[in-house]
Image (tube, rainbow, N blue to C red; front, side):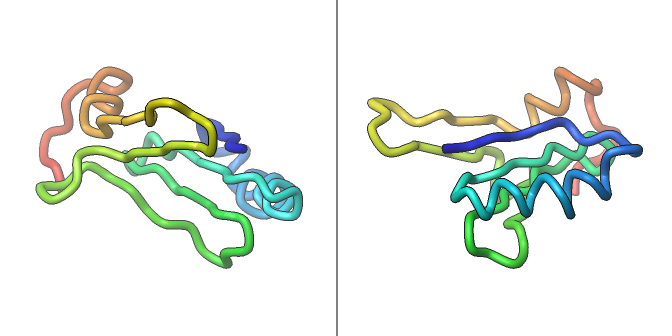
Length: 92
């Protein structure tokens, strides 16, 4: 299973310390979308730290295929952030 949320300033601590711990204990993958930093944190059950995904010259997409899904979900990170926030002035 996967759950996720868009992070806002007031929920940063709660998302990372409380919600993330709850989801990990339940065996659920958890994503936090950080709009300010233009990145996605992918927290996996049993892991102490997230993997960080952001648009770059090397990686533009994040692919997720849960067990039993016929096709994967493919997120184009640059397009996602550009649609939500407008084009970045410079990409990392």
